[in-house]
Image 1 (cartoon, rainbow, N blue to C red):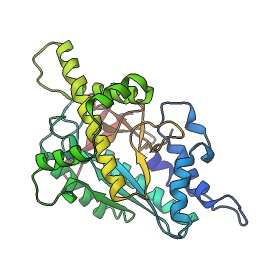
Image 2 (cartoon, one colour; image 1 turned 120 degrees about the vertical axis):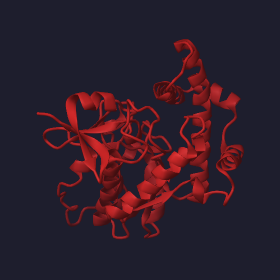
Image 3 (spheres, one colour; image 1 turned 90 degrees about the vertical axis):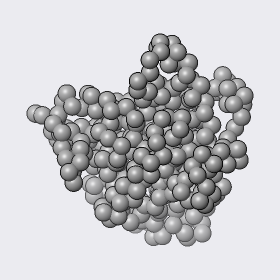
Length: 321
């Protein structure tokens, strides 16, 4: 199966003359093939996503460009067995190009077009995932350079450097968390009562355990520590999402996490991966013989391919035929 970044390069016919399908349905229809979900709703039509239709309609009724907000692209995993380094690479390049082309496709069926705001969330929980703020800054700076260099004109970025002026990052984290994060007790109760939240909690716990390097205790002690940190990551991620919603209340809210049909956010898949939770910042890219890009842990990719450099830095692996 082709990754989204490659699929969208194929020409697609415009809607037939006289097509009476509401434009918001047609816009959402462009996103549906890339719906990231753990449930059975991957093939559901636009009507299964009333919240997204409502969000899009706010822009189309006003004749304005559709604004999508996507929390993500935080920083690279600190586990060298999963990634090639702490800077963006081929995974980010392909994912950003996919998002830009998606906006361009919307512009072909809706004159005012669309824009995508990449809301990098690394600083909000960097201390919980053991990634230095300096590495997160470097990742964000390179992300913006990549957007400019690749000519991705539909994309903009937003991160903690836009929030609370010149305060240090610990202060900024505390201010955003105090203002928007749910209480630990409320989050624990939701994990117990809501399967989607429990699934997110398990996924974040797994990532934290995988990403922890140099832990000298027992595996059970590591799991306990990661379960506690997972609550903090989720609480702060929600705080970041609520801050974005406060700053951009009319945006169409996307998520890199799987979301069921009918949720307030639309989960979007950036590239092909066997794991529904895989992202470019937790993996490396393996280019397969047909050119398809697939996300997998670096340790697995390097068994299957040769390392490719771009601008003198490790970029991805190319499968050895």
